[in-house]
Image (cartoon, rainbow, N blue to C red):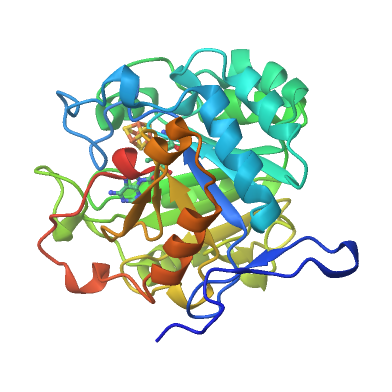
Length: 342
Ligand code: SAM
Ligand code: SF4
């Protein structure tokens, strides 16, 4: 049931910024922007070794078009942005996009999700352009295993990438680890131990059976309770508030005396739909209201025709589903996260 104001921004009274709410009253303030569907990795859980049918270049929003979307939606209540993909850092001149997004009034926070390969070179220019912080995906601390999981050997090293981000001021650094039984689950303790000395937020993500994954099945999913049980061998875990900015759908803990925290993200065993605050912009300009659903509203054509985007945004929020159906979808059939800007 839609409320009468579903999707409409609350009036901006007394200089307060507007608020966007969906049909269930959830405040929507966070936009994840996919800048490309392509990637320099081929992670086992994300895309086939041969890649995917990539979007034609002409269908992908140009930087000025992405900025125009944000310029029109920020006054409606979107104030936090995350740049993602595919691998966003392979799109040329990414700092230029960050610089332009940072200049949009109302934008308070710009984060980046990356596989970290190019961070040693790009962290400083991205920070200089106004990026706030980064999430780095890292599924192993062993070079040979990184290359096996990513199916590419590009010399990724988590500690080097995270230290480059920190040195550039991109903090707090979050690290995302997808745990896969028999593939990297024996490294859970080593990842968790990094938080003793580094002020990083290491988050363990339950593997999701999305896309056309042939090599990973439900047998590879390691439930979060099992992950936390393993980490308990390092010391008692105390619940923690986690990072001040953007703690999203993770639950956090801290090892005794730990500089950083340990987070768990459990799409397979819990849902966070009740507190969902986000929508996604695909690389080809579709506004998707749920990661695991087909609901979307096309923005590219109205944008290219010069039409205002507010009515499309309001319609998307009025139609945003209450919850995703991932837990029921044990047979896959969902799209890869690289395609929808995971
Ligand atoms: N390329 C960037 C990266 O890897 O961080 C950004 C895009 S990637 C699709 C975003 C996040 O989705 C990564 O942290 C990745 O580990 C996660 N992801 C992708 N497919 C997944 C799956 N099947 N299950 C769980 N997490 C997944
Ligand atoms: Fe690329 Fe990120 Fe997908 Fe890995 S998870 S293949 S790095 S988009």
